[in-house]
Image (tube, rainbow, N blue to C red):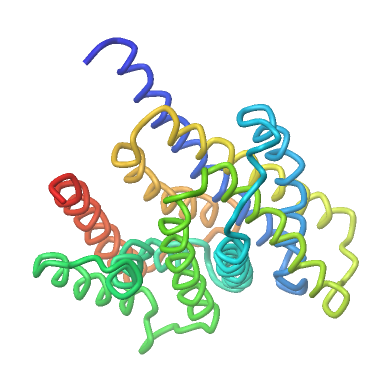
Length: 291
């Protein structure tokens, strides 16, 4: 491995770690704004501000032709799943501790693997089926249905399902569309959908809460940019595992801002979900090159 390759991999890992921290901070700012606002207000600020940040970068990197597509419906459906998923996460994090919601969100690889079977025609071997089953046990532990169960946990689970579906659609779109185009249509669809909903749910935020929403949009846009560069500098197989550092940010924010420590069920459930997710990722990286 050359020094240039090492530097590129290190930059990719650093960008992914920064992206995860920025996106976790976005959730933190939305949670600070409080649960009295519709999650679609958070979606609007997140996507509108991020669009202002990301679109010039796309224009500079890929040129004006990068906005053309022959698959507008595919982009719309993918973006719709992403927007609804984000709104669900915003509501979940506003009502439950971040570490609880993040423990459930870490199960995205499990649901993505399941959805890939009917929609992408992928075959899943016995080992990954076992990992999926164990992962679901971890999700159930994190949900804690017999203990301190909260409705927000169900929204986190629904958001996870939506995001997994969004990732499946991204894989389908990636056959013909560039990452820049996928990001662009996600951003503008989020703005359009939230604008349709806002007249019915809008509550004028206080100055303090408006600042929180603006900060959420800024760090959300930064997270999107850093993730794009992470994938540019290093292979996805190298940087993807660092997405699990999100749980560290969630625990840190819970402790420093809300003085909340994760309970035993959250820690156990998160541990199982992360372990199975990493195993599925490991099997993906070993099996795919042979296909």
